[in-house]
Structures are given as C-alpha cells and as structure tokens.
Length: 199
Image (cartoon, rainbow, N blue to C red; front, side, top):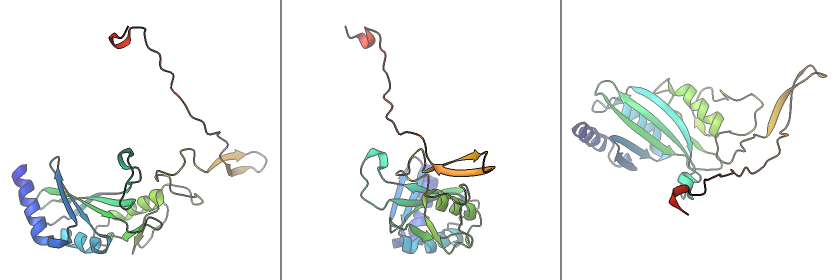
C-alpha cells in the first residue's frame, strides 16, 4: 500500500505541480486541497492526464466547517469534497476545495467532467447553499420547493423554521411557523453510592 501511495503522490506532484494547495497523506489516503480558481482545471487534469486517469467520480459532498471539531474555525466555512477513482491505475484520491465567500459560497461545477456530479452538486446546493457555477439545472433535490434555508448548515435550527400539517377546513396541506417550544434537556445521571470505587 505504501509503495502504491508513493507512486500516486509522485504522479500527482509531477502532473499538478504548484496547482496543489495542500497534499495530506494519512490513514492510507491522499487528500488534495486546491483553490477555487484552480478547481476545475485540476479536476480536468485529474481525469485526463495519462499518469492519473481518474475516470470516475464516486462521491461529492458539501461540508460546513464552522465550529470544526467544536473549535473556532479560522478558514473559509464551506468546502466541497470529492472522491475520485482511477479504474486504469486502481487508486483513489480525495479532492477538496473551499468556497471563497462564506456569504455566497460558490465553486465551479464538474458535471461536464463527470456526469455523476449532477445530483451530488444539486444536493450540496440544496442542503448547504453552495452554488455550482456552470451547472445546467441547479435546483433543490431533497427539500420542498418552498423550503427556506439550507438544513445541513450548522446554524440551521434543528426544529426548522416552518412545519406543515393538513388543514381539514382548507382541505389541503398548509405551512405554519414551528410550534415546538425550544428547551434545554439536561440528562439526569443516576449513580450507585460506590460508583467507580469512590466512597
């Protein structure tokens, strides 16, 4: 495994050069981080370069890094993480790009490179609000058409903003503000008198 990773790392560094913002190698995997300006070009090179040949996009997802690991996060808040597979060389790589603007997170679409990115990008747009520039049909895919907000953002309330119910008088489904009262739940801890050997 180590020799294969050495070969992959050497190929990535040789082909991509200074386009790699950061290369992290841990747990038997390689993660490349690139800037938004170079994201599409790097993705194209990863797919087309004979030494790399990442023909398949396995997964693409959004990440909200605010309060990452319960710590304040100093960098850009939103990232797109893609997992790529080379069938030709039988190796994988993770490609990460942070959106430059937290207020309007935006990165280039890679649907023209891998058609599998289509619904993944729509999901990241729907759940995180990340806009994919150049996507031909960027609209919600999991939430309702009238849904407000992006539910996978860490600042989105767990109860949501609205709820829907069937109104028998109107004979249809209606939306209304959430009627759940927010509350803090403090767990009750019950221990035996001599728990943990303490008397």
